[in-house]
Amino acid sequence: MAENKKKESKESKFAYKKKSAWEIFTKEQIKKSFDFCVDYKNFLNIAKTEREAIKYINENAKKAGKNIIINKDKSAAIIVLGKKHISQGVRIVISHIDSPRLDLKQIPLYEEVTCNVALFETHYYGGIKKFHWVVIPLALHGVVVKKNSKKLSFSIGEKDTDPIFSVPDLLPHLSRKVQDTKKISEAVAGESLDILVGSQPAKGDFSEKIKTAILDKINKDYGITEEDFVSAELEAVPALKARDLGFDRSLIAAYGQDDRVCAYTAYKAIMDLKNPEFTSIALFVDKEEIGSEGNTTAQVSTFLRSVIKQIDKNVDIDGVMLKSKVVSADVNAAVTPNYTEVFELKNASTLGNGVVMSKFTGHGGKYSANDASAEYVSEIRTILNKEKIPWQTAELGKVDNGGGGTVAKYFSRLGMEVIDLGPAVMSMHSPYEITSKVDVYSSYLAYKAFLKY
Ligand code: MN
Ligand code: MN
Image (tube, rainbow, N blue to C red):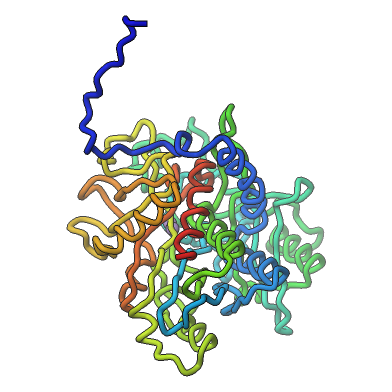
């Protein structure tokens, strides 16, 4: 075989090369990745809102005898005590459980007499491309607190036998003036994202027959009146099931993977955690997609302080925080076919290359960034390498092309070490986001390893 001389490598042995999770993982680990994602898809189908995610996590954590504390049905902490006392600091993996969607307004129902239909008014939640949300099947999830203070939980549109809802769009034949010549961000207006909810008029002498019939129907079915919508949180989410994508089934397409992919993998990691060195907390927070504003979010440290106090009421909380280490479990943007020009490819995340370490977030000039220290990045990198967990490093897009942030900065403000760690997602913030099964599994392994040390 003399002729088949090994070609000399052109790359320096000191060069860094991003590795594929498909190569690093053993055959068994790849199988485990696929198996892991069966239940992950199930979680995505069950937990399409922040409340549903907390309910799932709470029920399963309690069933397994875990210590879990719930805050207002929208955020939670699972705690596993470590060998060292809590005064030595804690390990936290924090993820968010809210996703972009269409929220109903407080007086949502109206009849469009010129069209013979009834609709719900919406106000979109989070950063969406509005044209993604028309003509797809939508389900309504959420709660209505009725006049008698009774809380009703809703989920309509998920079962095959359920009706769905949808935002109508204009046919291409007539969209030339009102859509086609506009900027894509203006082609579908925020006020145009109203949802069709019915068309059959009531019999009788009513001024709005269709609206009347809808009110009658929802009162009959759920006992709610129009005023009850004022004290409701109803969210229209894609009525799409999580599915395997591709001939090889290597990818997952589903709604809400930002950031429930991290919520699920963090939840699994702490459920499987045994005898960690430091007290470990998996924290799940709400409203990240609207800037973490509100009493169930990462900006409010009161809940975390209360959790630490519940572990040891005499501990010096600031002292604990200064010694604590955090993984901000959130997704990064996967380099997207046909649009690779917005990424700086050496420093961008790609599907199938494992969990993404983002040293810093923010935008132009690192504004509003959490920038993890070199020392902390080294710690995380060492753990991942030691455990042979596939990882890559990335920032979100080219310099000055945009950017984004996560909850990391709110925890670094408390004096903790914080870094972003999570899988790459393609089509992020769309109704059908895409992840790779080996990246999902890598994230689970990464969170578990982080909490263990
Ligand atoms: Mn996110
Ligand atoms: Mn997001």
